[in-house]
Image (cartoon, rainbow, N blue to C red; front, side, top):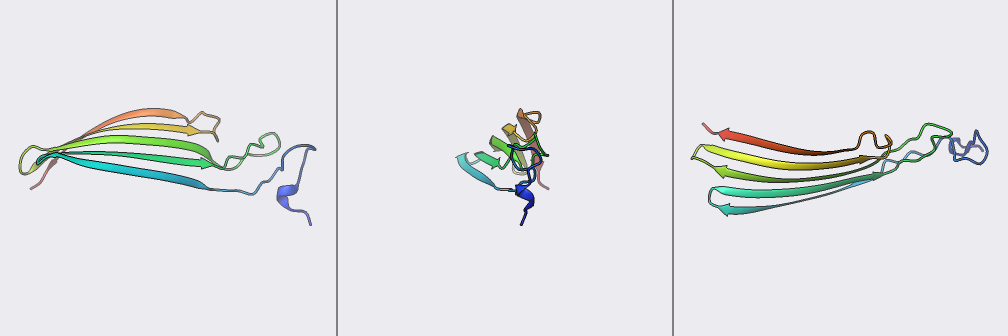
Length: 119
């Protein structure tokens, strides 16, 4: 019996069709702290990893995903009045993509602010 993942078009190379895997894992954590009766602080971190990229581009289309992502953020909120709250958030993102040969890699910073008014 011949299986698709055992077919070699060129001798001494990897299989042209491989079994596809989509395994990944994620870790997330967060912590908050009440600074005073009007101010809160919160930080969080997440990590994502998929290590399923199979490099056989010499004989076929490579399948699978090979990526790593780190995300970290810090948020501070302050109650300005009884009905108004201010939020300021900083985030850092780091993404590495093996599948695209590094063409989709990035590092990014973000700053977000918000003003909430309750009626």
